[in-house]
Image (cartoon, rainbow, N blue to C red; front, top):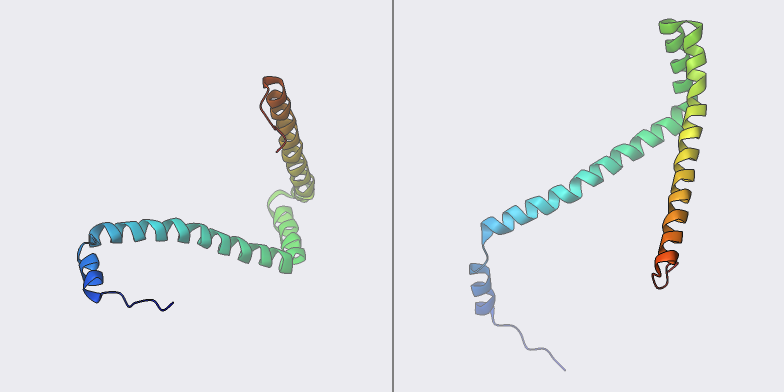
Length: 117
């Protein structure tokens, strides 16, 4: 079944009824809401790429800088950074598992239907 062409006068009338100021404000808000996270994501990807590409060099520079600024204690401090990072990640994961378990138990005790779904 062939579709009949639309009346162009109706489209012109619809465009005349559009509030351009509201449309501009709406698109500006939408663009800002989309562009900001995309910019942060792009910066994160570039930083991750540089760290993965130059990680050994960055670690060496951190050791040299810490040694210059703080002496032997600085190198020891830089050596503790991986341990602190691992502990932070492990603690975050453990806290998430504990919170999920507590909330799951609370759902079961209060009788929420299908708490696992």
